[in-house]
Structure formats: C-alpha cells, structure tokens
Image 1 (cartoon, one colour):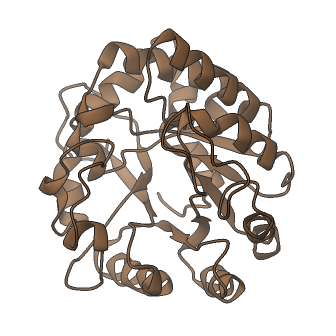
Image 2 (image 1 turned 135 degrees about the vertical axis):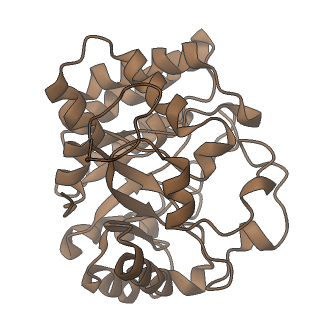
Length: 312
C-alpha cells in the first residue's frame, strides 16, 4: 500500500487494477437509462440511487482504504449517437483526475457505420476494446437463436470478426444460458482477445442453474483467447449472497486460472448490492489457498496485460 494510504478493514494491501467500472457526468452527455424512462426490470432491482453523476472523486470515496493503482472504464450505456464522444469525455477525466487508465468503448456490430466507429475507437489512445451486447433471450427457457442481432446473425458475426483488423478486444456480456452459444462464436475468432463479463452472470444459483452455467464456463475456458472478469456477483433484486458468491468465484477461477482472471468492481452498479470492501472480502475468501503471486495476477497483473494498462 502506498505510504500514507488508509488501511482497510480487511488488511488487504495488494495493488488493485479495477478492470470494469463506469463513469458518467449527466451534464456532459445523454444516458437514457439514467435520465429518461426508468427500467423497472433492471436485473439488480431499484437503481435510482445511481441515477446521478459518478466521477473519479466518487469512485475514490467508494474504494477508500484500498490501493487502487488504475482502472478500466466500461462503456456506460451512453446514447448510442455519442459512442465516440464518450471516449473524449474519458480523456478529459484522465487528464484532470488520472482515471481511467484505459477504456472499453461501444459499437453495435450491426450498425451501418460500424467500421467508421471502430476506426475512431482504434485511434483513441485510451480505447483497448469494445463491448457489443448481442440480442439475448429473457430467460433460460426461451430462445432467440438466429434472430437479427443475435450471435448467429451473419451481419453481427461480420462486425465481430472485424475486431481483429483493428486490434480491439471484445467484452462479452451475456447471461449464463447463452454461454455455450458464446463459446461456439469465440471458437471462430481465435485471434481476438475476449473478456467475459461478470463471471458469466450465474444468476440462478440452484443446482440446475449452476449446471448450465458450468457447461458454458467450461466451454469458454477451453478457448485460450478468453479471459474472465470476477465481477458483479449481485443477484436479482440486489441480493448479495456471500456463501454462493464464494462458491462460483472459486469454481470459475479454478476453470480459467489466475493468469486469465481479473477482479472488477462494476461500480457504481456493483454498489447497489454491496460495498467494495465486501467484494474484496468475498473474492479473497473464495480463494484461501491462493499465493501472493496468484492474487497479484487476479487483482492487477492480468488486467494490466490484457488491457495494456500503463499504471504504476
């Protein structure tokens, strides 16, 4: 921990590169999900507490006591007409506040100007990759396979395949019932770095639900270009279940290994369910036998390598 930094209640003093969080300034851009119609179906429940600015000072307050040496910003659902303007907003924050150190931008793989937007993203000094969420089914019992915008849509697949030419990674964010499909797709893009968000979203912790999650996770772990974010363990309605969280973290890290796993907070969204301190407590509590080298990989070095982060 840096000299003079306050010590946290866990006594955790390893450096942290937070691989996934969001910043927004509601006076700078348009964030429809925060300022327009409220979404009562948001998977973590009532999110009105975060319908406000969230900037580096807020992030530092939420992570006080921990040695956060850098962060990666994840696109924050800014208006899709402002996809490249979000990068400029982040560059201003970086210049003034030192955060974020890198960014994952947004594009729809099916939008008409996808190539133009990817060209702009690739040229921006902060951008390392993109997140483009495919159309997904509302639950495990439903199917949208083959529909426009899904992971079987030829237009969507062409957009995804173009990332390799731009040197950009893809952040994969689908619920657990789509993980096996995602592995089918990933096997077709071996030259693209893929980062699976939020532990594959194991939202159903029943034995049946976890069996589906495990099959998909193993399929993705078998793809050497896929990395894992140990992040967003909140359940429906913002429930935080430490016992099952530790179980899925332990299993997922065992599948991927520490060199392919990275911690992330998903703040401020992650703060709807728990505190940053509790996130760290559950991740470290899930891995009691981890060596310091393994923990350094999980909390900083994997993120540094995958996202090419320049941090102390």
